Image: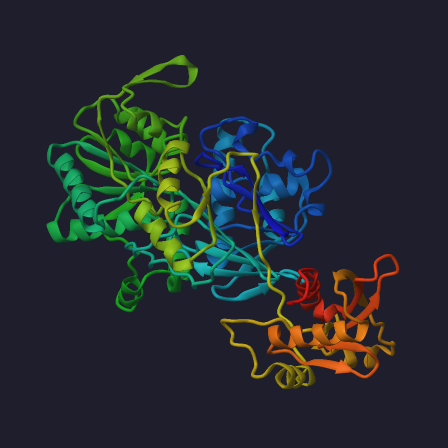
Length: 593
């Protein structure tokens, strides 16, 4: 039986470094190619040696699909294509193609120019990698080759995020990032057809979480910021430059305007201008409220939020600073955190998930003494708050997506093992569910159907032979010859078109029967018996001394060894194999006296 194989090279029972290898219908597809923010060595990249120990990946992959621009989903792309070697097509949406190289270059600067790391991709490699990208439009079916087709759906996770439906013949897989089932301030809610794929592969970052309503979270966030500002403290909000950052900026901008607050709000420069530029450029990817407001003013042009200079971190008095990156693992957010950590008036609000190994993950788990670079320690006295404005779906959102798509099987990635186990238990009440670790392969057997056209002559013949056409809910067997890449036609038509003579295949069977009568009398008794048993079949007693039931011929001869024994010879064509088997079993039981 055909099967679909799925192997995580990253994000298997882990968060970060998303990279899923799917083998379907003889095609190999890589879904995402991310890096792990918690590592600074080779472990930050997926293990591509699983695909091939030496040689380029082009020979082993039919295409690569990137779901969105977060670095844990696209961060290893230049390393994979330019350093390991891949020249095939890379698919992503237009916004992802625009934003991806900016984030990659920003991360390269931090890693290579500031930290001095080697064995990392260069600026030129990023450019060369992006030349291989083919942009996707939503709901457009793209034919990768003669057999493989892909279709993107709106995911609402971040700007340009997409769910992807992959199809080869009648086999299909849907891959989704943690979709937003509900609209954010800046993006709309996710949606997908009831496509009933063989496997739905979904992230499960918040697998055990059912979050409060969005409005409650927004109110709590604004309250915490306001209280800290009122007591003269500073608020640090570590964010990634796109997505969540824009949502929180819109929230604070509106609140500051309403409350007439004077404390400055800053956003670390660099990526912000470019980020907001792309939100303006791809305004059709945002939600309806922003598109409507866009006519009067652009919601990404802020009156109260100014560009941040690193010298402002030492200024006295209250302030709010959005700084990148979002997990406090490097960059400006970490520098500001070091300066403000010693004052208990200050607060850091973590608005999203932090992977293990990052400073963000450590402080959220209550660590108050941090070992920094150069073996120095940092005492954390400021208040630490976690408020999930993550664009990842919670357990409820994932279950809603499953009911929307109605998959035959479910496969979870990008989550912590213990939390995934909880969600897996819930899903298994309705669907088969898998959660493979990195390097572990799940094989799911499929039952593909092959659609064929049937010739009109064959249909007409079936109607005359077997009454009305079969009910779709109660199918019946039709005998014909399938000519590859053509129609299903009757055997006679196929022989005629191919210029062949028909070869008759018949089965024979010998049955020993105790009967003292003459051969002709025994044959007549068989005819009478079968007429009484097989009322719906055509039974004939022919002059040549045979009985015929449909295509089955029955002859009688006396046994040479025993005068009272008869030998019955049954012969039938392959079409009547079931009936022939039934008759031989029936006659073995003997004739009624």
